[in-house]
Length: 151
Image (cartoon, rainbow, N blue to C red):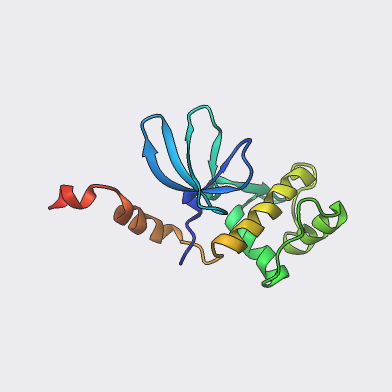
């Protein structure tokens, strides 16, 4: 199954990644990728989609999807080093995967988040990402109540 990074969410202050389930009156209903536990986050929570996140390089920003694919090229089917691993090991991974990352704006703390996210997607989703043209198609199919409106 393809992974739609526009539906995979990071919530500030929360560990792990979440899959968007539905819009609720006061926020959004999400499901944790790791344990499938559902919860709701409201407007007070800072929520970012994986599709909207990019890292700084010396030329321009690189979308997280592209970073993940570059990391997969380097790592193969192995997981990335843990965010608790030696900093030199994490920096070495990014030096191989994204050699032009901007060390003045892409910090080790950012790298640690990215390796944690990479490992979660490796464990609970796939690196076969939905492309932009497919996004619209799937969003139309997944819209609740749309079929009833079209009948």
